[in-house]
Image 1 (cartoon, rainbow, N blue to C red):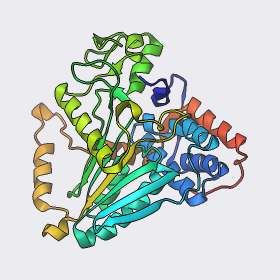
Image 2 (image 1 turned 180 degrees about the vertical axis):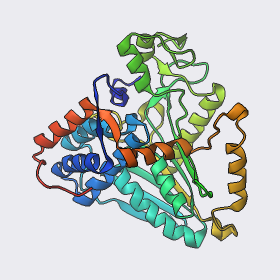
Image 3 (image 1 turned 90 degrees about the vertical axis):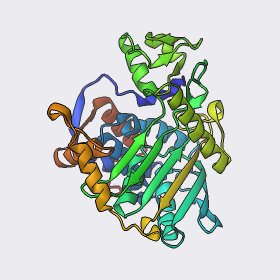
Length: 359
């Protein structure tokens, strides 16, 4: 397991309440002070804040430390101008030129949306693009525009092969968005059983892991968090999760010409060039004769939500994150005091405490 995945840990210090505007402004100040154009700094900052508002701190502002250091050492080009090339009518090749992932991905999505209106389907294959962060905001944006979206990205090898040893498979997440009445279906899932950050968190507290989370360096199942930190995460769902993770990673690599498994680097550390790839796909249902959102799909979703046993709540993909985000926008959200202190320290270091990009 990569030691740099500790970026995903939630920490053990106190918490402070903030809101989306305040958090975005501070993070954008840091990025602008490191040479990121103001508009791009706000895009990247907002994307990190979105993760914190949805309850996924592993992809939120805690990642600013690594992000800032990668800019400082030249692994991220803060003002990169990506190259967009239409290789076919619905196929967009994106050379991110080592720019910020969300900045490039949102620009690519705008191009795909315009093209999908003509071709029905448009796909972008991206390389030399930094970490995309959470996938749900991308697919949520597309679904809100009446488009079906699929986003794939490859990651560092952190997961063991089913029945094997060694961190040879990425957590290779899948994002998907489908327009639906009363709340779009929004999927954002990893193909690992748990994040490496959680395992390191258990190790720091000296607590035993639940069964099925990880294996040791020899590939044996373990509940010893310290042994797991030197081993690998288990795929979710056993052999099926392993097969899905391998397949998604192979699909991304085959279309983007990027690395696989142990050769994927650059989203967790501050020393390696980014060698992962990303796939964005947008589908315009109206081209196929279906104007979203579908009434039939809405009826089906309601059947799911009303199917709870003995009054239990049943959700569909996207419901919980939507509720968490709405609460965060209304009431603010908690963030680790250590994370906030780090942001303020970074802002002081780059001389960005003065007026910066608005949130």
